[in-house]
Length: 105
Image (tube, rainbow, N blue to C red; front, side, top):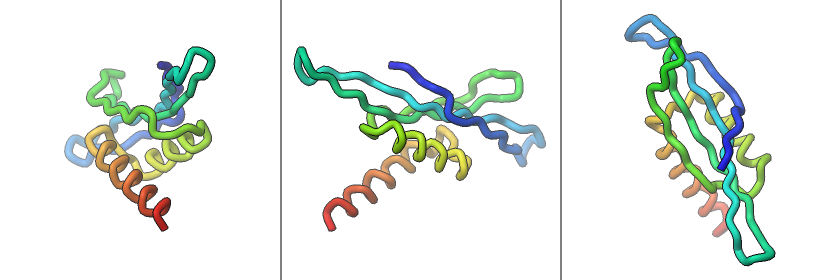
């Protein structure tokens, strides 16, 4: 599995007056269906870090997409909305539920 940095944002911490950074990564995983066929799936990873480069929190949601473009668009949406590791899995759960509803209609 590899991860590629998609975007970094700076978020002001209202409690301390300092800023922290959130990095959004695209991850990929390769799975074998058979000896001659493999599938690549993409996910996202969100890492919160302090100004000192010390990592504070990380959350990963692997294998959400079969398209790199979809994973990149999702990571961009996460960054635009300043999603942190604490809420990533809730956001992913809502996204997947919405996608399932759209597929059923």
